[in-house]
Image (cartoon, rainbow, N blue to C red; front, side):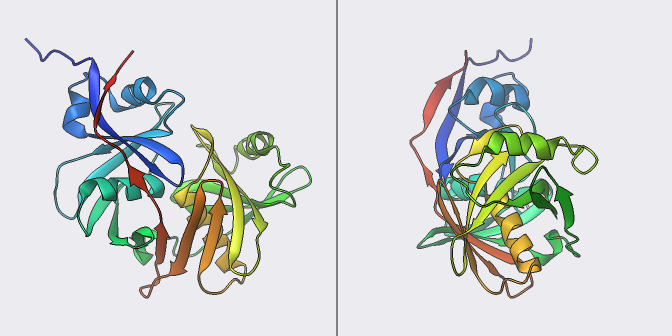
Amino acid sequence: MGAVAEQGLRCVPGEGLGNTFLLAREEDAARTGLAPGELAQRACGAQWDGLLLLGPAQAPGRRLGIYNRDGSDGGVCLNGLRAAALWEGAAGGEFCMAGRAIRWRRVPEGVELHLRRADLPQELALEAVALDGLTGVSVPFWNPHCVVPVADLGRLNLQALARAVAARRDLFPQGVNVEAIADGGPGLLRARVWERGVGETRACGSGAVAVALAAWAGGAQGPLRVEMPGGVLSLAPAPDGGVLLRGAASIGKPMDLALD
């Protein structure tokens, strides 16, 4: 006889700049008898942006996966990765997420991630995206992104903008994350983010990287800060040609989550 599925999930709540997650080990997720995508749908509801599943320790790094609240594969999530780093409890380490090895270390601001040069676009070809009265740029960084400068973030109908960008199936056949940005002063960009499979979130790590890559390609120099509703991420070119990303994260107490 097969193992009997459990009715709850042993997990830990976490967040990165207000981007909320449930963190669980792969073996605990397997005990529920649900596939990861279905488990994410059942567990996250409207409260959590995604489910992070942590695999066993292995070389070159521990496996980490994310599933959005709609059950879709989230690819790489840098806010979630920082929360998982805190859960590990060590001073530093490495995760393998969507086939990419990302080193991390604890810093006073929270967690610093090192995105390797080999994992960034070797040639950043930004393609203009014509919208109704606006022009964005597609940024080919891991998950699909479209960065759109706007005049007023507060009054922006982000959902309508995201729908208009997603309608460009010729450019984004697998959906798209939309980052609306506005100038916040020297070295600072303000942003709101609409993530595919989730909706508007308080922050997005890969979205902040896409914003920084677009800014650097457009002539910006040196470190940048990207301010989102959930907080600020600091980004800087790494000595190896990659990117260093720093930001806060937190985790809560372990809990047994009932699955309806």
